Image: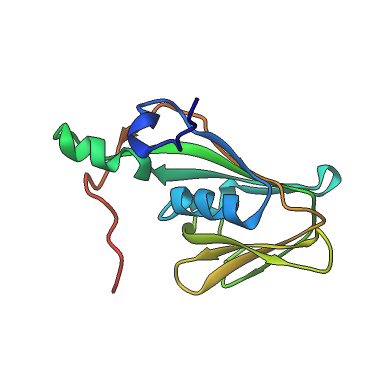
Length: 160
């Protein structure tokens, strides 16, 4: 029996529930979280639980081709991005005092440390970043609502 990799078309309209335990897996999550937006008030670090979570309004990149093919509007979905094993959180260019500030995810990456430790970096539009020092890489991305029509009704565009 031959094993075949999954394709975007195989995903259908099912909610995502993915995990990343290495940098390669994290790149997949980063692609899916790209252009997600969230108010600063939707970030939370639970120091006692060593967990950082953010509720994102994620563009459904995995559905873009199907939406174009079916001539329907592009969609967003609320997703929970969770980073476990977090021992320290730092940010740059993020206005902590204004909880209504809207932030936009450009990428999620991993900078390895000495052993299994390192840092998960959430790079934000406008030169902002959130650095999560972790003892081991463990990140999940899970859709928690039904998809909804993107208010802009268009695919996010990227500067060249």
